[in-house]
Image (cartoon, rainbow, N blue to C red; front, top):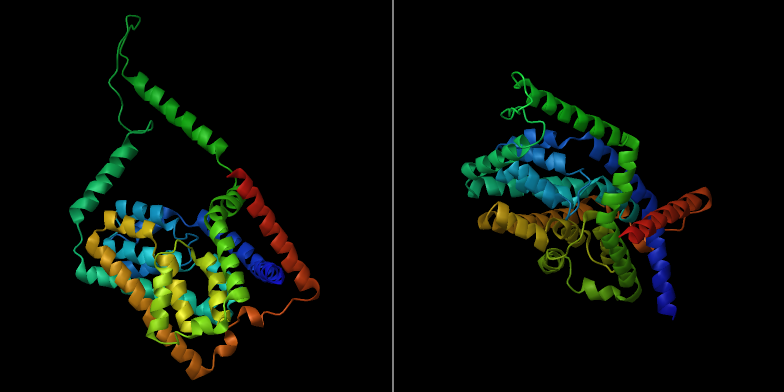
Amino acid sequence: MNDILLLTENFLALFMESAPWLLLGLAVAAVMHELVPVSLLQRHMGSSSVSAISKAAVIGAPLPLCSCGVIPAAVGLRRSGASKPATVSFLVSTPETGVDSVSVSYALLGPLFAIVRPVAAIISALYAGIMVKLFVQEDKAAVATSQTATAAASASSCCSTETAPSTSSGCSSGPSEPAPARVEESCCASKATVKKSAEPGKMTAMWRFATGQLLEDIAVWLLVGLALAAAIQTWVPTDFLTQWGDGLVAMMVMAFIGIPMYICATASTPIAVGFLAAGLSPGAVLVFLLAGPATNVSTMGMILKELGRRSLVLYIFSVTSAAISLGYLLNWAVAAFNWQGLIVTAGDTALHGGTTEVIYALCAMILGRLSFVLAGKS
């Protein structure tokens, strides 16, 4: 019974600690979703150059897309003409970090991880994209076919510029060629009017996205992650994970755990808190934070279908090797520059007092209410 109470206390403490930062991340993500057009992404990622790979990594890093949300976005980019290296770079950087996960990382893991995490995501994305550029040949014919199919689908709408052949009835007394054009213009005008009247305001659209689609993408795994983190704090002995040490074996274990998991960057953060609290090194935790969100069965299946088997092998190799290398680098930097004080673990998180505690509790209630309403709709 005491263990259950301790588990509940740990869960509520983590939930309250992450709530205001998660709400902030949802707000920023919603603003970016409404203001960053997909066409901008497509325009800058059409080639296999290092510049295109870099743009894909930098543009993808802050986007509010997790492991599941990045898949349709990446397919759309690829079929709109994005190169294989740029698509892979986008696939790595986007789920590994984001504005919401950075804010939650700052709250739960401290400022060091809030900085290191997006930087590491961009570096690993660049590495993966360049590996694909070097060892995978671009199939330009397949891209052209996809673009042609997309263009054909777009051209089949009511507002196509082509006019249908005119048909004359017995009641017609003269040329009827202009009639189809007028009907078509009327159709287009009608559709435009309906679209304009039905389109919600920007603020409404942001609210719907943040509290609907985006929260739905992360809510379940966020709660699962918080529960696992609380369970690790409650029941896992500190020497269980530390037995692997800080070397290659520990990082390979973290990669092995993270690769098959279907989890987003935000939801992986509280699990990382539990790993840190159990005594795992910051570098090994970083391996989990990078490999977990970037790889899962759905993503790997999409890469196999859209980019080919060689791209998939390079993707997995690049994500794993980059995560382990960056993990080693982080461990070295923490020891060399005495950055341990910039890392927060659950045990270090003190209770907030006064007004701050009220704000955290209020944000936790808001987030809990939104999650409850979302669960009721599904």
